[in-house]
Image (tube, rainbow, N blue to C red; front, side, top):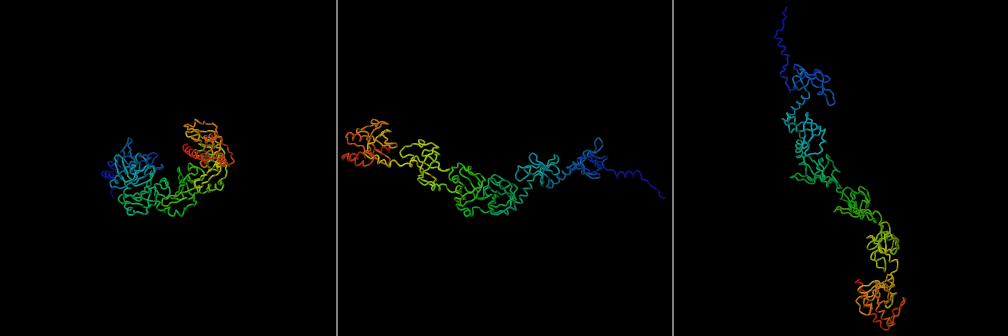
Amino acid sequence: MATETFPTSEDFGALLAEFEVDTSEIRENQIANGRVLEVGPDYVLVDIGFKSEGRIPLSEFKDDFGKVEITEGDTIDVLVEAREDDSGQCILSKEKADRLRVWEEIAKKVENDELVRGRITQRVKGGLQVDIGVKAFLPGSQVELRPTRNLDRYIGQEFAFKIIKFNQSRGNIVLSRRALLEKEREHLKTKTLDRLAENAIIDGIVKNITDYGAFVDLGGIDGLLHITDMSWGRVSHPSELFQVGDEISVKVLKFNQETERVSLGYKQLSPDPWEGASERYPESVQVLGRVVSLIDYGAFVELEEGIEGLIHISEMSWTKRIKHPSKVVNENDIIEVVVLSLDTEQKKVSLGMKQIEPNPWTLLEERYPVGTRILGKIRNITDFGVFIGIEDGIDGLVHISDISWTQKIKHPSEVFKKGDEVEAVVLNIDVENERFSLGIKQLEPDPWELIPQRYPPGKVVEIKVTKITDFGAFAEIEDGVEGLIHISELSSERIEDPAQIVKVDEERKAEVISVDPKERKIALSIKSFVRRSERGDLREYSDEGAATAQLGDLLKGKLGDLASEAEESADDVDAASEEE
């Protein structure tokens, strides 16, 4: 029978030592491995092999939606904040343990110059906040290759970053995306430079837009697409055609390898619309166009992209006086026009609107032939005449010289006022210069055509002095007909002042000594009338003619003397008229 042996006290000591945990290894602010014993409503009980368990708030185990992500028996890493509190339990933290692990991993990446990935969460002063497991700062200057104003558009996006500043004790991490972009850009630039050449077509991304153009990223190097090279048509601002981020194809216009400056073109990818324009838009052709711009002297009309023509304000209406083109057309109106001229070298097109309709001036010649009498109202009075309304937008001018045959008119307002209805005769129509000439005096025969017959030399007439001058006096023979009595014809005696002999409004008799119907001048003589009255050989003449022969009989051979005096007086009349 075997003898049963029992463990000694030494054996019990050894067994106890085998299962006993070395609690000296559990240190504060260190990470320890633990096992979840219980998941309560507020706390999670964790055993880390210490003499007492530790409690962790349940909130540290909830996800973004409030769901608890832990179960009994799970093994987790925790941070020992205190070995025991007043109740004898350990104070543990799951979040701090996770954060410390992240810091340790980040520290290793800093040491090995490795990149970190993170998601931009919000905008903060001076830049953006990035979640890389812990909060990190991304300065605004480190977001892109060039500073960008709109940082909000990066929120929610995930990128790779380079750590440019790391201080664990202060919890400070500064990131840079720009450093990665610069490195990537240099790599792309090498490849792009190999492809860059004038006239090459290359793809790029619109990187920035200014008032004068757009910068296009060609792959490590930027090129300028000037606003004038964006379209053959009119472009007010580059944003009308492109937006930042647009992928476009462009043509290399110029490339300077030394300065690495690239000039790009977009419109050059399509044919120049001016090629063949003369065939598409010959003179007199009618086309549709869109009004793209209004100026004081006309409107620009786009016939097609890249070809614009000017409608001068004078080509908008045959008859209306248009002060501004906005009275006729508006921007974006689609209108019909006529091509007046086209210059492909200067790239200019002259257009007309009024040519769509027949020229009313050409119809006026048919409606109002010369000699036609018209009745119309005076629309305007000027220093040189009056304008009479003929048709809508068409006025006829009665020049001041065509108002009266005999009346001396200084200003038309002496005779007419605006709105008066008057009759006139068509004198001339100048279609090319759009002038319509009328006359009022032509309604009656020219009285001067009969003056030589009615007032032959030698005839005695009743006169009324109307004006006295230094060289003589003017006297009215009949309404509108005046003659001049030269100072030498006022008296047989030499006088210095005509007022010594005659007075204004005085009625006298005088003898006609000459008549010039072309110049509309009559020379009179009181001296001759008085001489012949004294001799008793003066007879008054009728208006019936034969006066010259009777005068010869009466003068009885003295006609030569009278003719000499008449010639001398006529010369004085001419000199007097010129002086007047």
